[in-house]
Image (cartoon, rainbow, N blue to C red; front, side):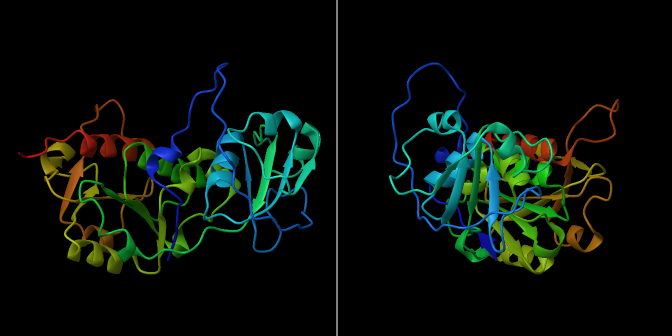
Length: 283
């Protein structure tokens, strides 16, 4: 199963704030009022709580999202790139009130949104698209900051999806969405029961599965083919599990200096995605 994202990846690019006026776009809302719990950073039963301008704005513009309620300062709403529907459920609040709705010290930027989780999506729904777009597979990467940052890089480098194992991945959350900076809404996040079986399905679809491993004999540049690529990354410290390594077609390393042992998994994913995006086309 997975999380469907509404729209193409260019909608997920975070823009830099500037003093220039931005064209107004209609923000989408399907309102349903709720009473919200305070203090934990979690939405009420069955809801996801998002915060921060990029995460909230992307969720509001995503037609796949069903929204429940927005808590906001007037300055926060004024910063949004678009207009809220007239009947959208907004509760005006001050900065201190919003701080009690989110995780400790979370930068909410005057916006906190309770919404439904994104709809489910299956792996085969993303394996029949543009073969030039890579797939990212994460083996037991559980830190929401890392998964969010990888989603952001996946959006930046036009990956077709991010795949994780359902039981060993963080839930959809405000922390993850803030790290993804809007990419949670545009990159399909596929959660599967059995990652090894999913890698078999990826191979059957014609993808070359490259596991990132510091002990790989080849560099990533040497291992990259010209066809569809699935990049497989393991958790920091443990790396990929043995069974997942056995389901890779090649192991490759990033050519980093011996002055440092390894890279953060989100940094490694960004570099690997850049390598795929800039590889020769083979013509």
